[in-house]
Image 1: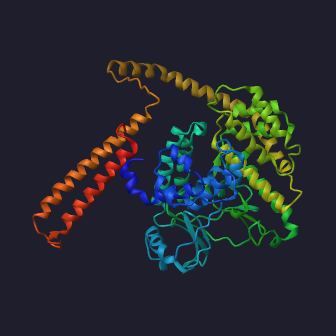
Image 2: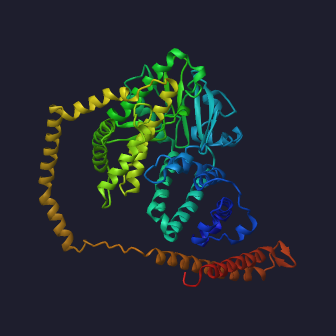
Length: 550
């Protein structure tokens, strides 16, 4: 980590390293040259009879919201992490106490651009929901009397997230470079992917647009819906929607027995229409994001995480579900390979045997296990070097969630029967002569258009060569150490310049006698000297710790 960054994030870095040491990861930290020697002397390792996967989950819980969110996102990545760790990460829950309403009052007025009393006749100060990024309060619109939900971003949350993510990114790079047996997991790219996903969730305009898109394309409004979004009041830090009264499916005892089977079927129909027909779907329809209204309708909330499938991805999914139904390991393997990208050379027979082992564990796929099987197959593909689009893992999680919720409502819920009409509709779409002809015409038109542009493209290329604008980009691998050395050297040089400036400036101030004084000398000059001493000692410590070669 760069010296200046470490100074800036020193407190949080110490907390992260302390938690890792406490749960027995000091050996890993020593391999990446993290400064844990003094921490190990003052922090006692927890003597707990837990395995490594459980300890990783406990580390996330102790580190707080950012780590918990990372773990929850990783639980949707079976191609990246082992199944035991996925199961542990599924246990992670946000345990975030809400801030007092007075702390978020200013955020609300800043985002609304007016005083709260202008728009709302009543606002409840007690939060009805709280997470790592935001908390929710109820309010009543002054003009209409409608109750709405105000999802408000916590003050300073983005800065805190970025600090944690920067430290974790550094740690991932160090582990990737120094710990050989973890290198195949490519932790830096995993953290970068999760970093982008988390930061996207801090922009509530994305969730607002996702919610509106579902409501506009939803053909089952009499069964399933999402809350109305008030775009005129919503922003990147505030989301205003109708407040929906109802119960969660997890409180099954409060749901009328006669409605449970119907609710399970309607929920399954909606999710499979989203996935197979529209290719735009709610990626986390667990009971916490489902509300059963007093009228017996289903409301899907929290549209911050969605999946999107292209037409060809939907076709591949249909092939996979058909192959799963036939329990044909060879066909499943062939379809899976067609779904993958950037696959390294592999042994197809070995992969097929691994797929067959997964299928052998699930002789009956009609009892809420399709999502789980897909998750396991994605993990098998991942460890064999076959990369899949993250949207495939999101749809597996979506199917798994709706299976579990449906079976909780109705033990006889048959997800295969729910999916069948949509798979048949998609199959007809694939063989429909009219649609195929339209696709041929479209491809022919695009081909002719590109052919017409070819002479102009060649002409532009020749002119660029004549002007010397064509360059060849070369990338040399294995230069990470050189980059780190240059960064470290430039930071030390910058610190040295700052120290020199502080000494010169302090010396000039000392001679002026400017108040306030301490022992007859200007306090500002004394502080400058002390700061230059501290930074100088830091440079010496950093050189001794890493060696002059860095």
